[in-house]
Image 1: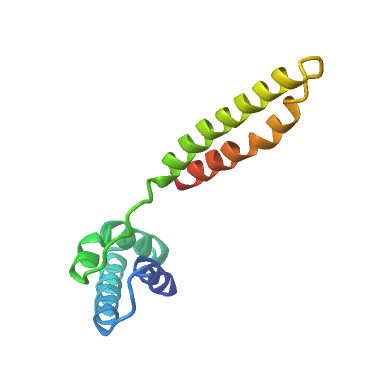
Image 2: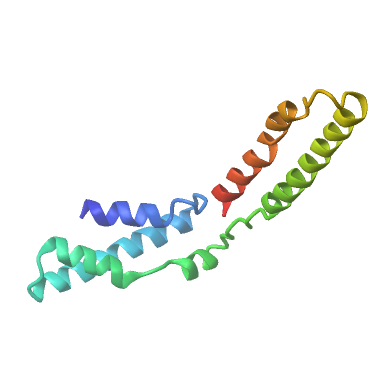
Length: 132
């Protein structure tokens, strides 16, 4: 029944420690064990009974709400940072192009700093993908 204990620990991993949490965890574990024993009496193998009990138990969002646990809000600033970095990069590249063509039109050098500037929106894009 170690698998059940690990599952219950995983369900409650982000809930802050408290005596109430421990009591509810113990009760959930006890209910799951009873369900497993019932399923085994009906002829299921132990592994199948454990898996079925876990699937039948489902989610604990209601229990988390009773404990007063609130999920942290997703940070939507990653999308804003991505947009800011794209526009900022475009403006910097446009400035480099202007300086290049105004002061030294016979040598095209603005391409080189463009590669360095493009790392900014690229890193913001991958951060946005990771948080999405």
